[in-house]
Image 1: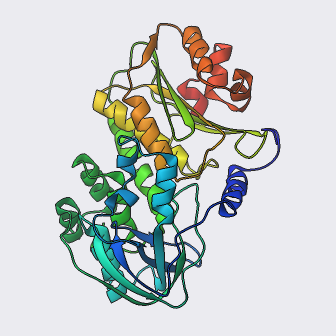
Image 2: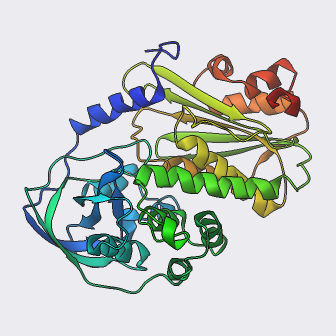
Image 3: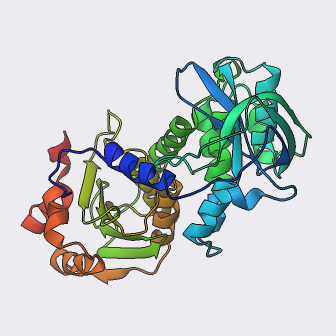
Length: 393
């Protein structure tokens, strides 16, 4: 395969996940199960607005938060193998429910889990022994799943910030998401609360499929942060921030311009000898359609803007990612957290664009020409006619 093949990113990643399903094994459980939810819930999107929703439960008791706490994995040096072992040890129960049935006793149990500050003891009886596993480019993997006949939990203590927005039924979901982020609540906790219908004005609350809620929260936060970043002065040089983990290398090129953004990702020899590259970009105007490269576009955008907002600066950003042999789709947390750590690294600074680009291209195995072929902003920089705001009007 080469980057010239007319295959979309979604189709390519499905090839990877299909191959993984034949190579890996998830935990085996019977029809009856007891364990601790990390806490975690999963809301499917198939047949929306009647969806399969339910808890995600570990097969062990006690503090299982590490299994669904992606913000802690990279700082603690958790390996890809450990993450996969965590995730395939989690069992998903499911039950069909309407997304607007917020007062349903079953949904109330899911909300109890989503709002909890600690692991939640759970007991489940399934219709059949859970089977299979799920890998996704958007959400983290999980192990086997099955419909539930019986589901009960022990109530625990709620996170105070999540409880506050739960009781504020006059606040819009967008404002609640921003307030929680400003209070330091981890993104994964905000997203689960959003997905479980515990955020927003009372009459508009509903269950939101997990993969949709991830992009929704990234987008809401990204748009808010951009409104702050646009008021800042620009940086005064070119900067390259790098980070490497989980069989990925990331490099963020910050430019002394107003906000413009491009995401370019290369998948290098993951399945064989293929070199797949996907890219998307934006300028002054907000993107009006969902990015063809998927949720990682919004996760990366949010992470860069969050760092710029904290620094009190504005910049244009071109972010390059190279996923290498051994890469496994673990969800867009992989992008968000790695870019966050890249932005927190000490940058290399350059006065001119030529020097910055020359260094940038030494960070990757793939020849620089392949990145330029798929790029808009990066290609423009190389040609010496940096994209201006008028290009996006």
